[in-house]
Image 1 (cartoon, rainbow, N blue to C red):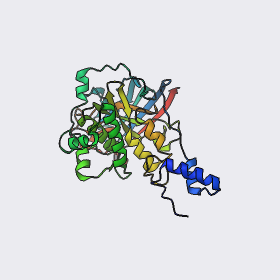
Image 2 (image 1 turned 120 degrees about the vertical axis):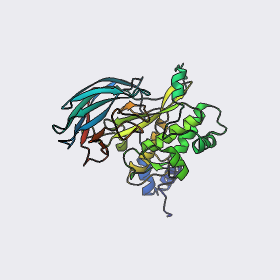
Image 3 (image 1 turned 135 degrees about the horizontal axis):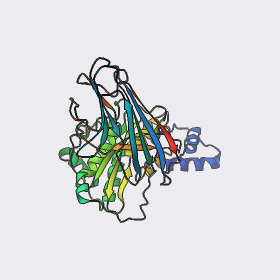
Image 4 (image 1 turned 45 degrees about the vertical axis):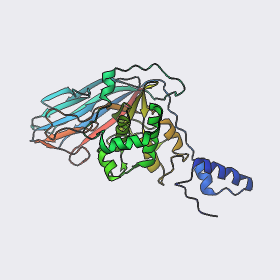
Length: 375
């Protein structure tokens, strides 16, 4: 029998092949195995869950002045309530700072060098899963000035040149914002891919992605490109920068976090504003993550039975096992000598005026953990 390419065969083809072969008693093992791996992923709004998130920073910087900035959850929507944040430590100054443009909050702590810096930040949030009922429009109302903010370019998200040309090509002939977003979402899934070698969540430099044709990246790159193309196509959109808290209730390993150790669980998602539905959840980057990492083999067919339910659900919804810190771009942290950060979902630190790499555990020691307080 001819070998079957399991990375390109579609779900429909699989099912047809399996049903026909069953009649003959000759189901290929590879086909049968893949049909049997069909998964369920169907988040729905329900009860709020309360989480406690603890970030602990221990810098090896005794004898040198240091500063630390820890992002705090500062999003209050119909899917997240940011309840409280408290902290302890040996900093001579420890206080909340707020980004003047986006309202992102963070704790800034200053240490005089008399002892190794120690800081612990405890935040509580409530989250809820999301899903859009496309058959039932709602009376969405959003302030016009607020929507204009989510149509503007950022340092890493220009909306002219190749970004605008690409967006126009993708949405040409679309008759509604919903159709524009669907086309961009599908284009992202087909054109980009998860690249595990990219550090952290990527940089989000969407112009460089389009100019080089290098569409491999992480969530900051892929969802950033989605948001930029939506804005360039005339649809308000924004990134939500946050972190996964607990495992997925649907058994997807790559769509959850280990609550005992969340240091590498940072993840950004996206939202678009549609007049008939309000702010709508989107996450094409997680579709790519499932395709690349959920199974031992890189799945290259988005209709694969492992991927298909995720692709469908993440167009309009997401699971509430994740929280957002903020929607902020190009954040200026007070006293941060390196300049702006493109997005704020990692702790930042400086020792003697030199920035530490938040992705380097040898130079910047911190831990993040979470627990469910109530279900």
